[in-house]
Amino acid sequence: MTKSPSLKAYAIGYLIFLYAPIALLPIFAFNDSRIIAFPLSGFTTNWFVEMWGDVQMWNALKNSLTIATTTAILSTTLGIFAARASTRYRFPAKGGIMGLIMLPLVLPEMIVAMSLLVVLLAVGVPLSIFTVILGHTLICTPFAVAILTSAFQSLDQSLEEAAYDLGESPASTFRLIILPLVMPGIISSLLICFTISLDEFIIAYFLAGADTVLSSYIYSQFRFPAKVPAMLALGTVLVLVSVVLLTIAEYFRRRGIAKTGGKDTGGFL
Image 1 (cartoon, one colour):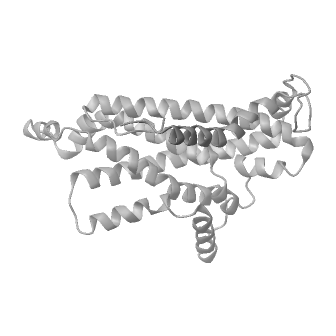
Image 2 (cartoon, rainbow, N blue to C red):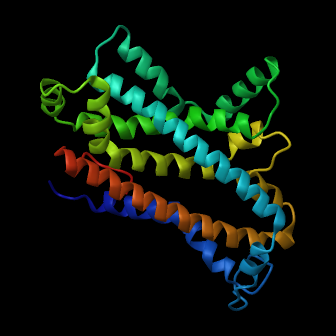
Image 3 (cartoon, helix red, strand yellow):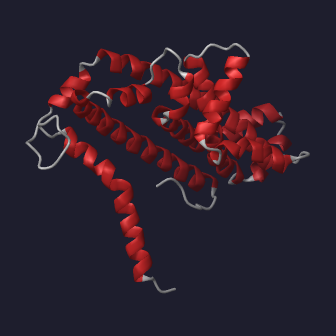
């Protein structure tokens, strides 16, 4: 198959358009000026020092880490159950049920956030970190299911049957045979869900109530021009952390596929 020069140029232009704003983050984060514009004024690390001393930012970060960690654990746990059921068993309305589980992937987050807000207020649940965790778990579970379904599909079913023949119970087989084999996929799911929850803004903005999370805190600080350079420094750190976590997640995803002898059909990187 011959490669089209126009298609190649389009792909390059698209990638530049997509990643150029991210590339500008560290440039202005190290720029010695509170005005975000060219030409640059010089090199400085003062904005990182200012960011480091921001007490409100640390409180928001603590809340976000609590939410992201809890969301990752809950989403991955639910993902294990759903992926195991979809790859191992047949049951009525299987396609419809799995479709409903994956539906948040295609629904606009604004619609999901407003719907959750209306429902939670209607049943009398106060907005807090807990409600943000509920919303993030709803959003992250489909990602966990997608990752773990690939991991469970790569398993050799004969290993499970051999364990049954040797006298193991279904519970011990799952714990001793299946879980170790899909553990790279579980780690990948945890990291991906953690990253998505940490970066998510819309649901956190609607459901956090009086509690401040990192994404909404960053948004609020852009109203003050003097705070923008420090927020760019924080954004640079968050982008770096996200890239590292996604790289580790992709490593474990590929390791899991190789471990179970499956075929790599594409991943995050």
